[in-house]
Image (cartoon, rainbow, N blue to C red; front, side, top):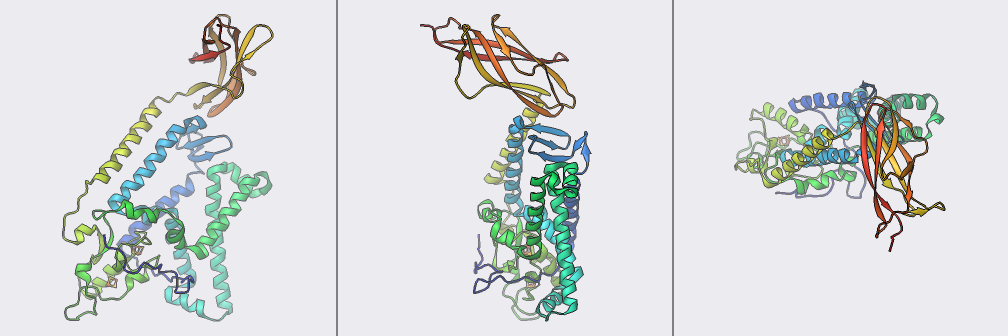
Length: 457
Ligand code: SF4
Ligand code: SF4
């Protein structure tokens, strides 16, 4: 795959100084499509923690109570397997999308791009004008107009950062929690701290760091060289058609008129004509810009287009490649795993696990005790009253302080449990314990416990 001939970052000058970009926008076909997707995602992202599905927030990650609400489904701490499958689905999904369509995630769905391109840049243009005006304003001496324009812009950035941060924290504190924290910051010190921290980080990103997040911080761009191949469809310049560059009408020149519009609209400041580059976030702004130029000079659109390198070389693009099949197979595996585990998911679930410390304790009255932890997971919408009973051995006892206990809907309760029996006459000291754990509506689960004690020689 051809690489950029000059791999120096376009936003870093010769002496290592940041070069500020005055990015222009062309309201072309791709920008319009991206705007629709971006505002839809923005809407979902901002709305999800504020609306209810089945009485709980549509999306909420309640870390103190170890509960995740995901569109009507409540996952508890004991549901780590579902989250693992979900994460696998997202990761392999991004791998597959990248292998097929390059960095589509970056250009179309990453919150950094969505906020910056759909909210911040349009607001900046509204306040300070087009790139030429912005450049002029930055170079101009400090005047009243400059002060109020700059102040207004930064206040607007801070308000947007605060609004996004409020929603972000609402994902963890819930809408009541975030509203309480906003009116009384000391009622949720951790939430308030996160709100301030995230607002400052977002403001810094909107006001100054911008494309550096994609170019310098985000690791995903670095992966693209291993995830892409010559059949991946991504933003590419048709070198065969465009070169050699030259003004319109130049004899022997290709279609590229070297107007540099593709560079002027690029949010990371790169020249796509140099080939596939790590900084390209697949925003397709260069396609819109070049198509506009092609229209003006009377040439067919698509000098820069969404195409594979094989297509540009005149070869067929292979969609089904080993990596595509492998990622798709992994997605099928995690999806099946997710559905199988979800279909076996029970509203009430009990787990009995050995507690840390000595495996058994001999009591003074001839009894032996095993110490365990009982976990009761209630994933349903109703409270349950839980009781325990020993089925076997007949002389066995189980003491769970607090039983019978009410376990609230969508909650998990952990209780200490003490299993006791007279010293069993088994050569290895092991014996079986069977415990029935039930609720008031005849739901029951029988758990077998391997009781440990001193071996009888
Ligand atoms: S090269 Fe084109 S697609 Fe890539 S970031 Fe720049 S404008 Fe967007
Ligand atoms: S916008 Fe098109 S014509 Fe202009 S420099 Fe870029 S590739 Fe060449």
